Length: 267
View 1: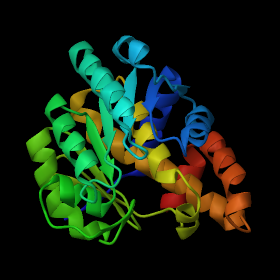
View 2 (view 1 turned 90 degrees about the vertical axis):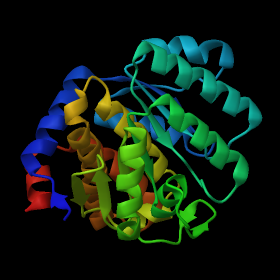
View 3 (view 1 turned 60 degrees about the vertical axis):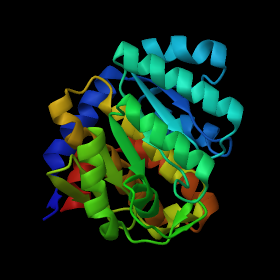
View 4 (view 1 turned 180 degrees about the vertical axis):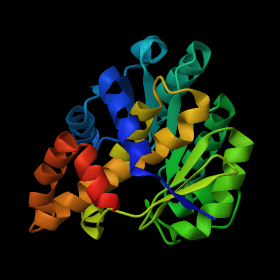
């Protein structure tokens, strides 16, 4: 049975995150690079969008965390991702996989399956992506899921057990699991789906939250990352008139998020 995450846990994880200001190496898709950097900056992390293959390995080894997103995958980017992930694994840098559209196209699906062998700290995807990575039949619609997040709970648990990663299935309700325990986050707003990059940015926030986090606390860290994004989105949507006004309000709410607003949102 999924458990709710206490506000005190989210507050503690956000406080740890902001005190450490993790240097977060982000290899993401071309559509969301700027937005992702702004999300990380608003929360208090230090983003670095290092993509040159000549630099990716060296930087992944010194970063606090690495986030990998295969949204606009090319053969050149795949090579960079392999270099960065291998370097992160050797250096002990926690890294996060965002398997955009896995299960829809063979090339990216095969790359994601290959990357799973490099022991990601966390995997963040929609229901269809997580089900596909777990080897289950899924109904993806391009980069969007045609499955509900609760349909992927068993797949997420199986994938977490097999990979050793914390697996987050995001949707109307987020489910985060280590293979045994399952935490649910119910917040956010449908308006978040009308803006490009909220899910991709979340994966980088997950990476930043697992930076410097003991392995036994990673489930709480990943769930807290999902919670702060959802709470900020919910608060922004309450004042936004549409997608255009949502984005600056979302960034402001990430920046202003504190113990009071978290407690109120989960009350």
